[in-house]
View 1 (tube, rainbow, N blue to C red):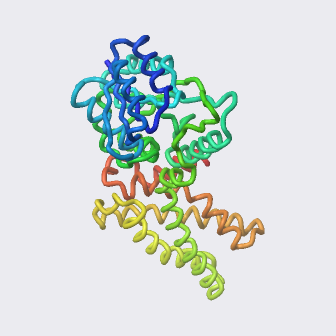
View 2 (cartoon, rainbow, N blue to C red):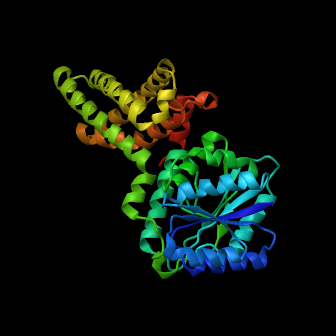
View 3 (spheres, rainbow, N blue to C red):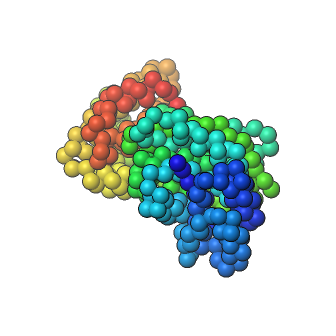
Length: 362
């Protein structure tokens, strides 16, 4: 048993067409539409969808796709206990055939499996450049951070077994960042990601999409952007101290260790308070020990790579930049999932995570 959930903001008649097709092909499946503050000009579209059998939930103002999804999830959990949910977009990108295909995958799952089924486009045929580029960048970043390869990280066609819905309701983020944050949190929450290929459909160059490339991309990448800023600050401190200590002592090992000790202190404070905000829930002593363990491992890796590059004739400053870039995503992944994660007691140690990351290079 499942219901179809469609968040909608200023939809056109493609929403009505989708509801009509679902009623014809999946007549016993409830359809829930969340009007995310579209306004009075769109009442007619929602009225026709309601006449076709859909339940309409309304936000008085536009709150964002993430908020609309959570409103729909909460309604289905309350009214239809035990039902799974398939989410779909309202702009014609998801056909009733693909909705049926991804819902059928729910029936093949082992009982009690906590997962999210993702309908993944293959990006064949005419695909808008911004959509192809956006998904490619996000896919690489997601794989680098989580060590999981998801072909389509931006898909809105997803299926949730009933057992997964309470977890989905607890995820923060009101706009497009909600769906990406869901993927980032899945593994550490014990949620598996299952992929199913679907048709790639773009109409009018995807002009009907309400995704704002700059603003919404910043929301999606916000955790990584904050980490990059923190790392850049630590990199500046570390590099300045490295050059100063190397000039004063002429001994690279002392320069690397001394510089890292200063920059690590700065980085720990900034990351715990500003970057990984849940890190403040981790006791200071526990977070400090985890961070020191990671810092020691990264220091050894840093020194090894620096030594190899400088011995090969690479200037120290260039070698430093290359080394830090190589270790950046490994450090982010480990700090997010272990050092500053309040639930990380059952996860691998920083050493195990670093070994795994090294064995799967970016």
